[in-house]
Image 1 (cartoon, rainbow, N blue to C red):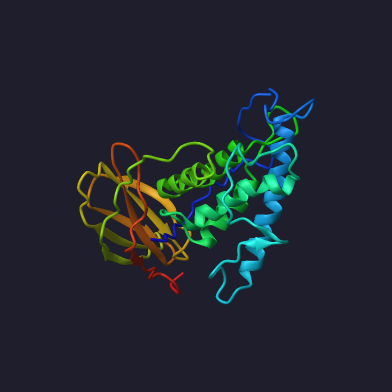
Image 2 (image 1 turned 30 degrees about the vertical axis):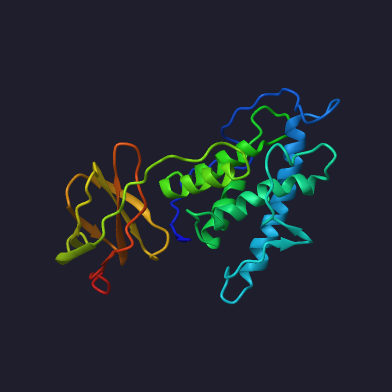
Length: 278
């Protein structure tokens, strides 16, 4: 199994908790009886799942090294056990049993064929909580709405969105993704054009990358910590002038007719040479 670590760029204007987007039917849940509505049952399950997954994230953070060989059991509940929707969603189950459906989504996100690592999956899950909403005011959130919230967090990465969609499909929520991702450039390089432009206090570089067959254009990303990459601009060329006011790493991704792919493994370290001259 190939485990991929992908940096997430999260928009600064993420919706606050229970405010934003999403639509739902207010119809009765065929799995429930009387006046029990689907949002209430799924919402109770989601609350239990949030508690379980957050506990597992916390417990695995204390591993040495952190997030290695994850333990998938908390308070006697094992989220590695396969659960399917709606077959394992029952009105007679306690909420924590129904919550194992979403818990298994998190497990599959880390362990499926196109998995992401535990730390990245944790970031997606925890940030998705802040994207949840109850637009109709019926005090309930569906599993599909949690899926939408996770996809929103990963909106800049087609790879992460594909992994999320497939993780939900593994518990019978939605279908498998058939998106073909565009491959990234195999190499990214660069060179200095002006070490320090003292008038503007910037360092000027030119970044270059290898050609990718079928790519329509290239997205340029930068990161001050070599982990969280921020989108900068797009171009159809195989090189681009760039400038910086701090040390950054630069990566490149490609886009084809259907989607954009992951960022390159290779990166160019773009050094800032004006420090101490200000």
